[in-house]
Image 1 (cartoon, rainbow, N blue to C red):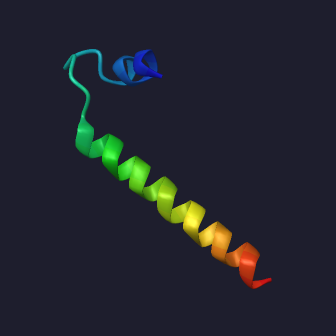
Image 2 (cartoon, rainbow, N blue to C red):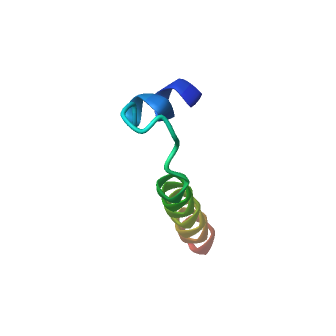
Image 3 (cartoon, helix red, strand yellow):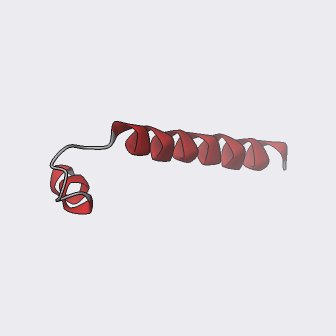
Length: 41
C-alpha cells in the first residue's frame, strides 16, 4: 500500500495527506450510507 501511494506522487516524494484524508472520509461516508440503506430495507 505504501508503494502504491508513493507511485501516485513520485515527483514530490511526500504523501499528500489531505488527498488521503479526503479519500478515506469519502470511503467512510459511502460505507455508512450503504450500511444505513441495508439496515432500513
